[in-house]
Length: 301
Image (cartoon, rainbow, N blue to C red; front, side, top):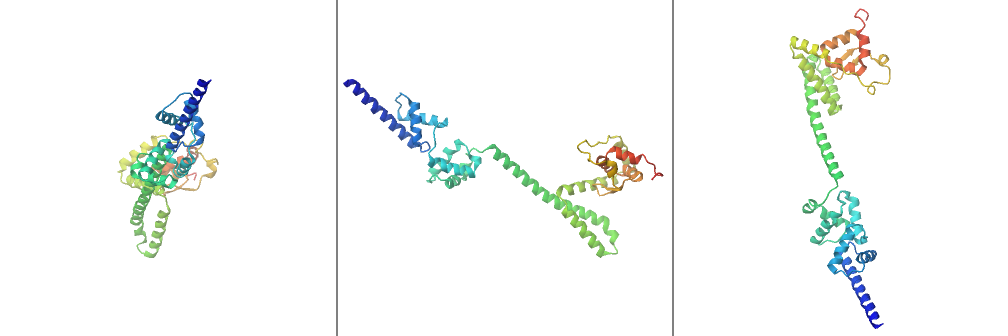
């Protein structure tokens, strides 16, 4: 009886020592310093008698498995920090940030976490979510494109306006007031256009200038080659829902600015002088509608 009582006392003392060791090791971590964790750690220890370093390893393993509850004094500041900076929400970042707080002699608060996360030597070591990396890349690309659009718009608009002045100014040589009004309207038109619209108009004018620079032989060869190329018919989804025959305008304005009478003479002339605008008409209204007009004769018009 005495031996049994003595043994029970020893077991009880050992149990108390282990419980005390668990409590001390949990308190050291602070992160896992929650009374609810004592039972979890003791259950993992079972009937063994681990040393304090071994208890610390068991706590670390349980924490990594997500089986321990975080101390509210730890969890709340990090929760607030992640709410503002979700890209840093990784378990591996917490140790880095805590060490940075200790080095800076700062307490654990959301503001202090944000402060040390902004340090250059800390930020470079923090894991960052891939979605945030992609978002930053897209934003930089959008900013670069926006800057390019602004530059291109200014340069192209200035070039187009210069071309307009060169070609139109002689027509108003005897009426400078009318010319000033016309030039102002053209300038306003160019300013109101987007960068893509200006690029399209510039490309069309450059193409017309290129064609005008061809010799008669080169021009005939290019027109002949363009006629042999199959014209792309619009797909079913690209075709307007309304009847194309009923909606054909009397005069169509191409992207280049050319006004095209939708007649046999107008389309025939367009196919010879500007095959690019002609293909645009075909894509816009369909080959059947264009052929219906070309099937008529000049006398029939």
